[in-house]
Length: 81
Image 1 (cartoon, rainbow, N blue to C red):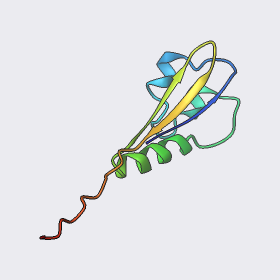
Image 2 (tube, rainbow, N blue to C red; image 1 turned 60 degrees about the vertical axis):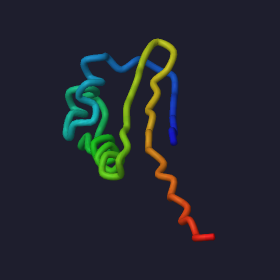
Image 3 (cartoon, helix red, strand yellow; image 1 turned 30 degrees about the vertical axis):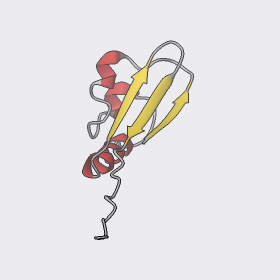
């Protein structure tokens, strides 16, 4: 399963993308905004704990965050005939 959220605006520099999901990095990326810089870290850790991942891509057209989660399809128990 994939879930994406995108918006337009200034692109996030590629150097910042590499650190985006680390805790307490907001001040280095956008010093004018308030917050601790934990939101994306927490979201990525929740995704990872469930076998998924959170990633970001940013260019001149958009910034897109994508959450990827594998879907485990339960095996259907076969009844003897």
